[in-house]
Length: 400
Image 1: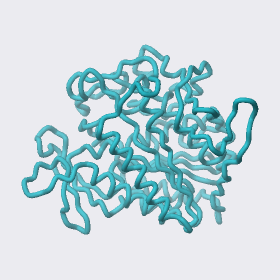
Image 2 (image 1 turned 90 degrees about the vertical axis):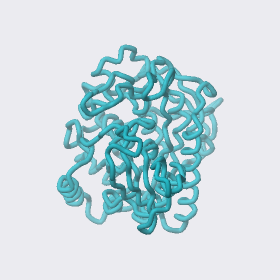
Image 3 (image 1 turned 180 degrees about the horizontal axis):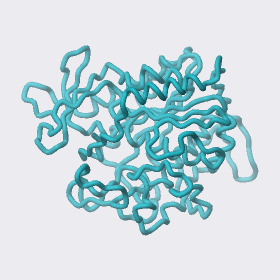
Image 4 (image 1 turned 30 degrees about the horizontal axis):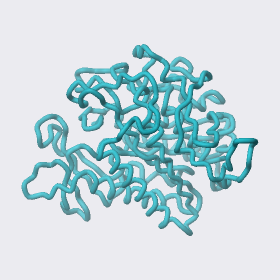
Protein backbone atom coordinates (compact mmCIF):
# COMPACT_ATOMS: atom_id res chain seq x y z
CA UNK A 1 0.00 0.00 0.00
CA UNK A 2 1.07 3.58 -0.61
CA UNK A 3 0.07 6.60 1.44
CA UNK A 4 -0.50 9.99 -0.13
CA UNK A 5 -0.46 12.32 2.87
CA UNK A 6 -2.91 10.06 4.62
CA UNK A 7 -4.30 8.34 1.50
CA UNK A 8 -4.42 4.58 1.43
CA UNK A 9 -3.37 3.62 -2.08
CA UNK A 10 -2.42 0.03 -2.96
CA UNK A 11 0.98 -0.16 -4.54
CA UNK A 12 1.14 -3.91 -4.91
CA UNK A 13 2.95 -3.52 -8.19
CA UNK A 14 5.95 -2.18 -6.31
CA UNK A 15 6.40 -5.32 -4.26
CA UNK A 16 8.88 -7.53 -6.07
CA UNK A 17 9.12 -11.32 -5.74
CA UNK A 18 11.92 -12.48 -3.50
CA UNK A 19 13.30 -14.63 -6.29
CA UNK A 20 13.69 -11.61 -8.58
CA UNK A 21 15.46 -9.64 -5.85
CA UNK A 22 17.81 -12.54 -5.14
CA UNK A 23 18.59 -13.02 -8.83
CA UNK A 24 19.39 -9.35 -9.36
CA UNK A 25 21.62 -9.21 -6.31
CA UNK A 26 23.49 -12.30 -7.50
CA UNK A 27 24.02 -10.56 -10.84
CA UNK A 28 25.16 -7.42 -9.04
CA UNK A 29 27.66 -9.43 -7.02
CA UNK A 30 28.91 -11.16 -10.14
CA UNK A 31 29.53 -7.99 -12.11
CA UNK A 32 30.94 -5.94 -9.25
CA UNK A 33 34.64 -5.40 -9.46
CA UNK A 34 36.55 -7.82 -7.24
CA UNK A 35 38.36 -6.20 -4.36
CA UNK A 36 36.64 -2.90 -5.04
CA UNK A 37 38.19 0.09 -3.37
CA UNK A 38 36.15 2.06 -0.87
CA UNK A 39 34.45 5.17 -2.16
CA UNK A 40 36.77 8.06 -1.30
CA UNK A 41 34.88 11.32 -1.22
CA UNK A 42 37.07 14.41 -1.39
CA UNK A 43 36.26 17.21 0.99
CA UNK A 44 34.76 20.36 -0.49
CA UNK A 45 37.62 22.74 -1.13
CA UNK A 46 37.61 26.43 -0.37
CA UNK A 47 37.77 28.58 -3.44
CA UNK A 48 36.50 31.86 -4.80
CA UNK A 49 35.34 31.75 -8.39
CA UNK A 50 35.24 35.45 -9.03
CA UNK A 51 33.58 38.66 -7.92
CA UNK A 52 30.39 38.10 -6.00
CA UNK A 53 30.92 34.36 -5.54
CA UNK A 54 31.12 32.76 -2.13
CA UNK A 55 33.46 30.30 -0.53
CA UNK A 56 32.16 26.89 -1.64
CA UNK A 57 33.12 25.22 1.61
CA UNK A 58 30.63 27.43 3.47
CA UNK A 59 27.87 27.33 0.85
CA UNK A 60 24.55 25.97 2.09
CA UNK A 61 23.03 24.46 -1.03
CA UNK A 62 19.73 23.87 0.78
CA UNK A 63 18.83 27.56 1.20
CA UNK A 64 17.84 29.51 -1.87
CA UNK A 65 15.16 30.19 -4.47
CA UNK A 66 13.93 28.76 -7.75
CA UNK A 67 14.95 30.81 -10.80
CA UNK A 68 13.93 30.50 -14.46
CA UNK A 69 15.97 27.96 -16.42
CA UNK A 70 15.50 28.01 -20.17
CA UNK A 71 17.92 25.09 -20.60
CA UNK A 72 15.62 22.57 -18.92
CA UNK A 73 14.64 19.81 -19.14
CA UNK A 74 17.66 17.61 -19.81
CA UNK A 75 15.51 14.57 -20.62
CA UNK A 76 11.90 13.72 -21.47
CA UNK A 77 9.67 10.68 -21.19
CA UNK A 78 10.64 9.87 -24.78
CA UNK A 79 14.39 9.96 -24.16
CA UNK A 80 14.03 8.12 -20.82
CA UNK A 81 11.54 5.21 -20.88
CA UNK A 82 11.97 4.22 -17.21
CA UNK A 83 9.63 6.91 -15.84
CA UNK A 84 6.77 5.27 -13.97
CA UNK A 85 3.24 6.25 -14.94
CA UNK A 86 2.65 7.86 -11.55
CA UNK A 87 5.33 10.48 -12.33
CA UNK A 88 4.96 10.73 -16.12
CA UNK A 89 3.08 14.03 -16.27
CA UNK A 90 3.99 14.67 -19.93
CA UNK A 91 2.47 11.39 -21.06
CA UNK A 92 -0.72 12.00 -19.11
CA UNK A 93 -1.37 15.48 -20.40
CA UNK A 94 -0.20 18.05 -17.84
CA UNK A 95 -1.07 21.16 -19.84
CA UNK A 96 1.35 23.74 -18.45
CA UNK A 97 4.96 22.57 -18.74
CA UNK A 98 6.43 25.68 -17.12
CA UNK A 99 7.16 23.52 -14.07
CA UNK A 100 10.08 22.11 -16.08
CA UNK A 101 11.82 25.44 -16.59
CA UNK A 102 13.19 26.25 -13.16
CA UNK A 103 16.46 25.59 -11.42
CA UNK A 104 17.45 25.77 -7.77
CA UNK A 105 19.74 28.70 -6.94
CA UNK A 106 21.36 28.52 -3.47
CA UNK A 107 22.08 31.79 -1.69
CA UNK A 108 25.46 33.23 -2.67
CA UNK A 109 26.78 30.27 -4.66
CA UNK A 110 25.98 27.95 -7.55
CA UNK A 111 24.59 24.44 -7.67
CA UNK A 112 25.75 23.21 -11.09
CA UNK A 113 23.42 21.39 -13.42
CA UNK A 114 23.78 17.61 -13.16
CA UNK A 115 26.75 16.37 -15.23
CA UNK A 116 26.10 12.72 -16.11
CA UNK A 117 29.56 12.02 -17.51
CA UNK A 118 31.23 13.54 -14.47
CA UNK A 119 29.04 11.59 -12.05
CA UNK A 120 29.65 8.26 -13.81
CA UNK A 121 33.37 8.96 -14.07
CA UNK A 122 33.66 9.71 -10.37
CA UNK A 123 31.50 6.72 -9.44
CA UNK A 124 33.22 4.21 -11.73
CA UNK A 125 33.09 0.76 -10.16
CA UNK A 126 30.75 2.01 -7.41
CA UNK A 127 27.08 1.63 -6.56
CA UNK A 128 24.17 3.60 -5.04
CA UNK A 129 21.12 2.15 -3.29
CA UNK A 130 17.93 4.11 -2.58
CA UNK A 131 16.02 2.78 0.44
CA UNK A 132 12.50 3.89 1.29
CA UNK A 133 9.06 4.48 -0.21
CA UNK A 134 7.92 5.52 -3.70
CA UNK A 135 9.49 8.97 -3.23
CA UNK A 136 12.83 7.19 -2.89
CA UNK A 137 12.01 5.44 -6.16
CA UNK A 138 11.01 8.83 -7.59
CA UNK A 139 14.57 10.05 -6.97
CA UNK A 140 16.13 6.81 -8.24
CA UNK A 141 14.27 7.08 -11.56
CA UNK A 142 15.34 10.72 -11.81
CA UNK A 143 18.98 9.67 -11.40
CA UNK A 144 18.64 6.90 -13.99
CA UNK A 145 17.18 9.38 -16.49
CA UNK A 146 19.85 12.01 -15.83
CA UNK A 147 22.67 9.46 -16.21
CA UNK A 148 21.24 8.15 -19.48
CA UNK A 149 22.63 11.23 -21.24
CA UNK A 150 26.09 9.69 -20.81
CA UNK A 151 25.25 5.96 -20.91
CA UNK A 152 22.10 3.91 -21.20
CA UNK A 153 21.77 1.36 -18.42
CA UNK A 154 20.81 -2.29 -18.55
CA UNK A 155 17.92 -2.90 -18.44
CA UNK A 156 16.48 0.08 -20.28
CA UNK A 157 12.82 -0.48 -19.46
CA UNK A 158 10.07 0.89 -17.24
CA UNK A 159 9.51 -0.74 -13.89
CA UNK A 160 13.05 -1.80 -13.13
CA UNK A 161 14.61 -1.33 -9.75
CA UNK A 162 18.23 -2.24 -10.49
CA UNK A 163 20.14 -0.61 -13.35
CA UNK A 164 23.70 -1.35 -14.44
CA UNK A 165 25.90 1.09 -16.39
CA UNK A 166 28.26 -1.44 -17.92
CA UNK A 167 30.92 0.87 -19.35
CA UNK A 168 31.42 2.53 -15.98
CA UNK A 169 30.80 -0.48 -13.75
CA UNK A 170 28.20 1.59 -11.89
CA UNK A 171 24.97 0.24 -10.39
CA UNK A 172 21.92 2.06 -9.03
CA UNK A 173 19.18 0.17 -7.20
CA UNK A 174 16.00 0.75 -5.26
CA UNK A 175 14.81 -1.15 -2.19
CA UNK A 176 11.10 -0.78 -1.49
CA UNK A 177 10.73 -0.30 2.28
CA UNK A 178 8.15 2.40 3.11
CA UNK A 179 8.56 2.06 6.90
CA UNK A 180 12.31 1.20 6.82
CA UNK A 181 11.66 -1.45 9.51
CA UNK A 182 9.99 -4.86 9.41
CA UNK A 183 6.29 -4.32 8.75
CA UNK A 184 3.22 -6.37 7.99
CA UNK A 185 -0.32 -5.36 7.12
CA UNK A 186 -2.70 -7.01 9.58
CA UNK A 187 -6.00 -5.50 8.43
CA UNK A 188 -6.43 -4.13 4.88
CA UNK A 189 -9.57 -2.19 5.82
CA UNK A 190 -8.10 -0.53 8.91
CA UNK A 191 -9.59 0.43 12.29
CA UNK A 192 -11.85 3.11 10.78
CA UNK A 193 -13.09 0.61 8.12
CA UNK A 194 -12.13 3.07 5.39
CA UNK A 195 -9.52 1.05 3.54
CA UNK A 196 -6.59 2.80 5.22
CA UNK A 197 -5.21 -0.49 6.53
CA UNK A 198 -3.59 -1.35 9.82
CA UNK A 199 0.09 -2.21 10.05
CA UNK A 200 2.32 -3.89 12.60
CA UNK A 201 5.68 -2.11 12.80
CA UNK A 202 8.62 -3.79 14.50
CA UNK A 203 10.44 -0.57 15.22
CA UNK A 204 13.67 -2.13 16.51
CA UNK A 205 14.08 -4.42 13.49
CA UNK A 206 15.37 -2.95 10.21
CA UNK A 207 13.54 -4.34 7.20
CA UNK A 208 15.61 -7.37 6.11
CA UNK A 209 14.53 -6.71 2.52
CA UNK A 210 17.19 -3.99 2.35
CA UNK A 211 19.27 -4.40 5.51
CA UNK A 212 20.63 -7.76 4.36
CA UNK A 213 21.93 -6.31 1.10
CA UNK A 214 23.11 -2.70 1.52
CA UNK A 215 26.62 -3.73 2.53
CA UNK A 216 27.12 -4.41 -1.20
CA UNK A 217 26.59 -0.71 -1.99
CA UNK A 218 29.00 2.19 -1.61
CA UNK A 219 26.32 4.87 -1.10
CA UNK A 220 22.97 4.32 0.63
CA UNK A 221 20.30 7.05 0.32
CA UNK A 222 17.56 6.72 2.94
CA UNK A 223 14.24 8.56 2.70
CA UNK A 224 10.74 7.84 4.00
CA UNK A 225 7.82 9.64 5.59
CA UNK A 226 4.33 9.51 4.12
CA UNK A 227 3.58 5.89 5.04
CA UNK A 228 3.87 6.75 8.72
CA UNK A 229 0.47 8.43 8.48
CA UNK A 230 -1.07 4.97 8.22
CA UNK A 231 -2.71 3.42 11.30
CA UNK A 232 -0.08 1.21 12.91
CA UNK A 233 0.64 -0.83 16.02
CA UNK A 234 4.19 -0.49 17.37
CA UNK A 235 6.30 -3.42 18.54
CA UNK A 236 9.65 -3.39 20.28
CA UNK A 237 11.37 -6.57 21.46
CA UNK A 238 8.33 -8.43 20.24
CA UNK A 239 5.90 -6.59 22.53
CA UNK A 240 3.27 -3.93 21.81
CA UNK A 241 4.44 -0.54 23.09
CA UNK A 242 1.83 1.72 21.53
CA UNK A 243 0.27 2.70 18.23
CA UNK A 244 -0.75 5.51 15.90
CA UNK A 245 -4.41 5.79 14.96
CA UNK A 246 -5.13 2.16 15.86
CA UNK A 247 -8.26 3.07 17.91
CA UNK A 248 -7.54 0.23 20.33
CA UNK A 249 -8.87 1.08 23.83
CA UNK A 250 -6.01 -0.53 25.74
CA UNK A 251 -3.15 0.68 23.53
CA UNK A 252 -1.59 4.11 24.03
CA UNK A 253 -1.62 6.26 20.92
CA UNK A 254 1.97 7.51 20.69
CA UNK A 255 1.35 9.18 17.28
CA UNK A 256 3.42 8.81 14.15
CA UNK A 257 6.23 10.84 15.71
CA UNK A 258 7.19 7.87 17.87
CA UNK A 259 7.28 5.41 14.98
CA UNK A 260 9.11 7.76 12.62
CA UNK A 261 11.84 8.46 15.15
CA UNK A 262 12.29 4.83 16.16
CA UNK A 263 12.25 3.59 12.56
CA UNK A 264 14.86 6.12 11.41
CA UNK A 265 17.00 5.30 14.43
CA UNK A 266 16.93 1.57 13.66
CA UNK A 267 17.41 2.08 9.93
CA UNK A 268 20.37 4.44 10.28
CA UNK A 269 22.02 2.20 12.83
CA UNK A 270 21.76 -0.69 10.35
CA UNK A 271 22.93 1.41 7.39
CA UNK A 272 25.95 2.69 9.31
CA UNK A 273 26.82 -0.83 10.43
CA UNK A 274 26.60 -2.15 6.88
CA UNK A 275 28.72 0.71 5.54
CA UNK A 276 31.45 0.66 8.19
CA UNK A 277 34.91 1.30 6.79
CA UNK A 278 33.94 2.02 3.20
CA UNK A 279 30.56 3.63 2.70
CA UNK A 280 28.47 6.75 2.68
CA UNK A 281 24.97 7.10 4.15
CA UNK A 282 22.79 9.95 2.87
CA UNK A 283 19.52 10.96 4.57
CA UNK A 284 17.08 12.91 2.40
CA UNK A 285 14.55 14.81 4.48
CA UNK A 286 10.80 14.76 3.91
CA UNK A 287 9.28 16.55 0.93
CA UNK A 288 5.90 18.08 1.84
CA UNK A 289 2.58 17.48 0.14
CA UNK A 290 0.81 20.46 -1.44
CA UNK A 291 -2.94 19.88 -1.27
CA UNK A 292 -4.88 23.15 -1.46
CA UNK A 293 -8.57 24.11 -1.34
CA UNK A 294 -9.35 20.85 0.38
CA UNK A 295 -7.68 17.72 1.64
CA UNK A 296 -6.56 14.62 -0.22
CA UNK A 297 -10.05 13.13 0.21
CA UNK A 298 -12.09 16.32 -0.07
CA UNK A 299 -11.41 18.03 -3.42
CA UNK A 300 -7.81 18.97 -2.57
CA UNK A 301 -5.61 19.61 -5.59
CA UNK A 302 -2.33 21.20 -6.67
CA UNK A 303 -2.92 23.45 -9.68
CA UNK A 304 -0.31 26.18 -9.25
CA UNK A 305 1.91 26.86 -12.26
CA UNK A 306 4.90 28.60 -10.69
CA UNK A 307 7.24 27.96 -7.77
CA UNK A 308 6.76 29.87 -4.57
CA UNK A 309 9.19 32.25 -2.94
CA UNK A 310 10.55 31.63 0.51
CA UNK A 311 7.92 32.18 3.19
CA UNK A 312 4.96 31.67 0.84
CA UNK A 313 4.29 28.09 1.92
CA UNK A 314 3.80 27.00 5.51
CA UNK A 315 4.20 23.30 6.20
CA UNK A 316 1.68 21.79 8.57
CA UNK A 317 2.64 20.82 12.11
CA UNK A 318 3.15 17.14 11.32
CA UNK A 319 5.41 17.85 8.35
CA UNK A 320 7.52 20.18 10.49
CA UNK A 321 7.74 17.53 13.18
CA UNK A 322 8.75 14.88 10.66
CA UNK A 323 11.52 17.09 9.33
CA UNK A 324 12.77 17.89 12.82
CA UNK A 325 12.83 14.22 13.82
CA UNK A 326 14.75 13.22 10.70
CA UNK A 327 17.37 15.92 11.26
CA UNK A 328 17.76 14.94 14.90
CA UNK A 329 18.10 11.24 14.14
CA UNK A 330 20.62 12.00 11.42
CA UNK A 331 22.70 14.00 13.92
CA UNK A 332 22.57 11.15 16.43
CA UNK A 333 23.60 8.62 13.79
CA UNK A 334 26.40 10.87 12.58
CA UNK A 335 27.78 11.11 16.12
CA UNK A 336 27.56 7.34 16.55
CA UNK A 337 29.34 6.78 13.22
CA UNK A 338 32.47 8.72 14.18
CA UNK A 339 35.54 6.54 14.03
CA UNK A 340 33.81 3.85 11.97
CA UNK A 341 34.92 5.08 8.57
CA UNK A 342 31.39 5.99 7.47
CA UNK A 343 30.61 9.32 5.89
CA UNK A 344 27.20 10.70 6.89
CA UNK A 345 25.53 13.32 4.68
CA UNK A 346 22.24 15.16 5.22
CA UNK A 347 20.32 16.15 2.09
CA UNK A 348 18.00 18.72 3.65
CA UNK A 349 15.87 19.19 0.56
CA UNK A 350 12.65 20.01 2.42
CA UNK A 351 12.71 23.79 1.88
CA UNK A 352 13.50 23.51 -1.83
CA UNK A 353 10.71 20.99 -2.39
CA UNK A 354 8.25 22.92 -0.23
CA UNK A 355 8.49 25.76 -2.74
CA UNK A 356 7.36 23.61 -5.70
CA UNK A 357 3.59 23.07 -5.48
CA UNK A 358 3.54 23.37 -9.27
CA UNK A 359 5.62 20.24 -9.89
CA UNK A 360 3.28 17.46 -8.71
CA UNK A 361 1.30 15.23 -11.09
CA UNK A 362 -2.11 16.27 -9.74
CA UNK A 363 -4.57 14.45 -11.97
CA UNK A 364 -2.06 14.08 -14.81
CA UNK A 365 -0.73 10.64 -14.02
CA UNK A 366 -1.55 6.99 -14.45
CA UNK A 367 -4.80 6.48 -12.59
CA UNK A 368 -6.51 3.14 -12.15
CA UNK A 369 -9.84 3.67 -10.37
CA UNK A 370 -10.07 -0.01 -9.46
CA UNK A 371 -6.79 0.28 -7.52
CA UNK A 372 -6.42 3.93 -6.52
CA UNK A 373 -8.96 5.77 -4.43
CA UNK A 374 -7.65 9.29 -5.12
CA UNK A 375 -7.03 10.83 -8.51
CA UNK A 376 -5.08 13.93 -7.39
CA UNK A 377 -1.46 13.25 -6.49
CA UNK A 378 0.11 16.24 -4.74
CA UNK A 379 2.83 14.16 -3.07
CA UNK A 380 4.97 12.63 -5.82
CA UNK A 381 6.95 14.68 -8.33
CA UNK A 382 6.69 14.82 -12.11
CA UNK A 383 9.72 13.53 -14.01
CA UNK A 384 11.47 15.44 -15.38
CA UNK A 385 10.95 18.13 -12.80
CA UNK A 386 11.71 19.33 -9.30
CA UNK A 387 12.96 15.95 -8.05
CA UNK A 388 15.95 16.28 -10.40
CA UNK A 389 17.41 18.94 -8.10
CA UNK A 390 17.86 16.28 -5.42
CA UNK A 391 20.32 14.58 -7.73
CA UNK A 392 22.06 17.89 -8.45
CA UNK A 393 22.48 18.01 -4.67
CA UNK A 394 23.61 14.38 -4.55
CA UNK A 395 26.37 14.97 -7.10
CA UNK A 396 27.53 18.07 -5.24
CA UNK A 397 27.54 16.26 -1.91
CA UNK A 398 29.37 13.17 -3.15
CA UNK A 399 32.04 14.49 -5.48
CA UNK A 400 32.37 18.28 -5.37
